[in-house]
Structure formats: C-alpha cells, structure tokens
Image (cartoon, rainbow, N blue to C red; front, side, top):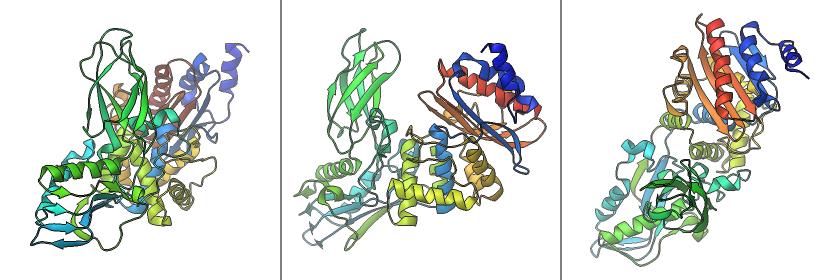
Length: 479
C-alpha cells in the first residue's frame, strides 16, 4: 500500500474531527507508527460528549498514567487528609529505677510511603534521632531484648508478581512494605575512569546498605545503562550494564531489599551509640513470623503528611512505590488485606461505582509498571471527566497533576508557549510505550479531558512525543 493510499484511509476513519486531521494524519503516516497501536479520546467537560476519538476502546499498555486510576481511587475513598501512622513502643516490663527494659522496642509500621523520603524532608526532620531521644527520656539504659520492626500491615510480597525482573533491583522497582523508609532506596557511589574499565564502588548511602553485589559494570559512553539485579529480602545480587566514563562520583539508585530490617538495624546502632545496651539482634515481624498488636506501651507516634500531599508527589514525580503503597492501603482498609490483589478489587469497585466500569481495563499493579496492565483511552478520559464533575476532592486531584512544560515529569516537554497554563496532565513511558492523560483548555475557552496512548512504535521516542504535541497544539488552537 502506498503512502498516498494510507493517508486516504486515515482520512476516512470514523470519528475523525476536521481540526485534528492534519496533525493526526502526519502522526499516523510516520514510519515509526507503521506497526504501532494508537488510541485517543477527547471529551468536553461541559457535557461529557466526545470531541474527538481514535480507536478509543482499544486496550493498550498505559505505563504510568495508570497512577491516575490509583490516585483518584485513594483520594476519593480515603480522603485528602488521611494520614499514615508509625508507632514506637515497647513490650515487657520497664524498671525505671534500674533503667532496664525487659522486653523489646517495637516500631510498628502503618504503611507510610513517605517516612524518611527525600520528597518530605520538612515533615520528618531527624526522626530516628527523635525516637532515640524519646526512648532515653524514659530512663532506659539497658534493653534485655531486641529492636523489632513490625511490618505486618501488608503482606510479605513486596513486588507485584507481574513486574519485570530487571526492574525490581532498581529504585523505580522498589517494593512495598508495611514499614517502608527512605523511599526504599539506597545509593551506590562509583568512581569511573576510561572506556571499558571497571567502575569502583566508593561508598553507599545509607551506610548500612552494604550488600553483596557482584560488580559486572563497565564504564562506557555518557549514558546511564546500569542495572541492579536483586530480589526482595536478599542481601546478594549483581550490577550489570554500563555507566558513564570519567566520573568522580556517579550514583546508581537501587531498591532496599528489606527496609524494615534496615530500620531496625539503624535504631539498634543509634541506641548503642547513645550508650544503651541491647542484648538481642534486631529483627522484624516477618522474620519472627508474628505481629505485635497487643501489649505494646506507646512511646511516640510519627504521622505522615496528608494524603493530598503524598498524591501530589506521586503524580508530579511518578513514584511507583507510592502508587503500590496506596493500592495495598486500599486493600487493607476496605478488604482487611494489605495485598495488591485486594487493592485492585477495591479500585475496580470504585470504577464501577463512579460510572466508568472496567471494560478493557486490566490491572496487575497500581503504578503501571507491569507490561500486562491495560486500559482504554475512553475509560481514562471518562474517569477524568467524572472526577471533575462528581469528585468530592477534585481540586486536590487536579492540583496533583504537573503543569505542562513546568513541573514534574512534564518539565521538559510541551515547552511551546501555546501550552502555557493550558495543560495539566500525567505522562507515562516505558519501552515502546508513550502515554498522556489530563485536562486541556482551548483558546476558545473550552475545557477538555484527553487520553493518548501509543504502543509498539519504532524509532526515537522524541518523534512520538513531538507528534502528540502537534495533536494537542492543534486541539488547543482549533477547538
């Protein structure tokens, strides 16, 4: 079939609106799209009517725009002011005169995804030191027991089953735990020299994260193509791929395999440094195969930022770990099970109750990391529309989306002045997938919701993004 015939067939597609003809025709006629699947849906928020669509009911891999489904459900079902709580306490008996605790220090996780996060430094300050101070203020000088972190709020399957193996050891593949900390991420620092040389590990932060990693990296080029391969709850793994040459301090970010145990070790070491002796080794509820719900005397409590602040970071920075936390929290609150599948059941019930339904929607996680996730452009657009007209907390949801060309994952995209103050949206990207969904204002004053998903393109992703920008620009100018 010649290009001329291809263009003619495109122009005959039902539902194609005149103002999008030029940009969409150019987009679909590009060789990068020849074998791709493309789905689009634009709805008018005044009445929900379709303004423009293209294969709107085709189920495609959404990548990170799936976070809009998870975050809207969490916001509507838990509320914008919902907070997670971490409790520090002790079990057993405390002899204040002797300064001896016969029992354990218990740190009970409440599923907080933000504890110690780099994105929430103003909320937690020096929380480990504050906990040590609270323990010291009880007069404790000796602990005949252990530091135990109770991570039993969620199940002990930190990573969704349908994630790729190559993702789980890296920071963006960090798992979800009943007690998470530091974004469940640690940093490996390297010094690199000439092309083909072996990068040297100089330090890790936090310093307690010295795991046994076989270093198979090489120094090559200027791009980061390094990967960490490691499984949850393991202290071994390997480094593979390449990182840039001639760097004095190059950093790879990796997922902490057991954050609850890491936190127990940190508190144990800090108490020892403070002169408080501890007889036993730090441990976790998972290792002890029990939870610590009864008989704990509360020493201190740590509260998270309100959920609306957590969701703002989630949708601005596209943090997979936060999305998976919210999914398990929904499962815990509404089903009594802190599992991925329970959370998915809650989200699907939410979609049904909201009037979106789940036709063509397949969820394996809450973040869009799984290549088995699917959604339709119409389903996503309808959710965004219903959030605006019925959502109890729509202002918080809307503000959680980055401004095109200015914030978050959209900071370096949609930089044309025509997009200024016209688009708030979430982006999604993975290998051969690019997607965008959000809210759009036209020059004529219309408010639209939109979703564009492209799967299995070839060539550079920049060309795909440029084509999508052309379609959105034409919509802004002509609708």
